[in-house]
Image 1 (tube, one colour):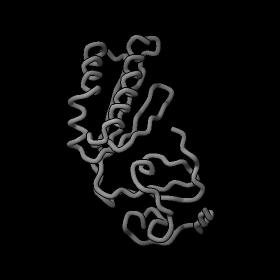
Image 2: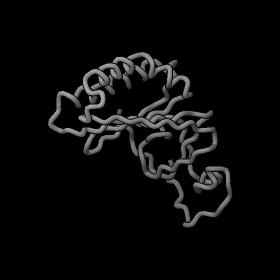
Image 3: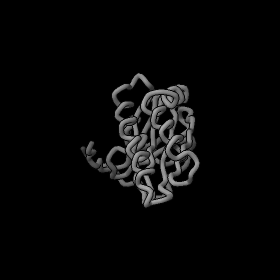
Image 4: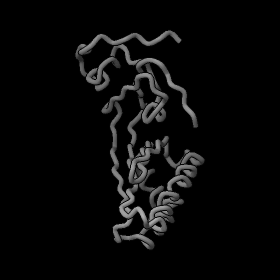
Length: 170
């Protein structure tokens, strides 16, 4: 899906608590294609499944590539829904395949981190960006007034360190 750049400064807002799930793979033995290619191919069907079934609690994902693998940044409505998905669907089958074909042989690394985020205990800024991350999962609003600085977005008060350029007229 191609997203257009939105000129100006915006912040994302989520209506409720949410979960950030960061999951990825690292190719440790580059020539072991028979090991890491199946792992790399496992994520797209899972993401498709999640987008097709919003009742599972999945909100959105960003896939990020790096020199040794890929990472997926996901947003979920609750930890309970994330855990339920992890124990079923395409994920459970991929997990079984990974344990059987790779296990702890060192050829491919996998990781995940899970963060439970309480409403209002996060902040974000996007300047001249297409929607990304929380900007896709939540609602974008102009970063003015209470959204002008990181401290204000987190509920505190301070003055901007620099003059904030105005957003272009739409």
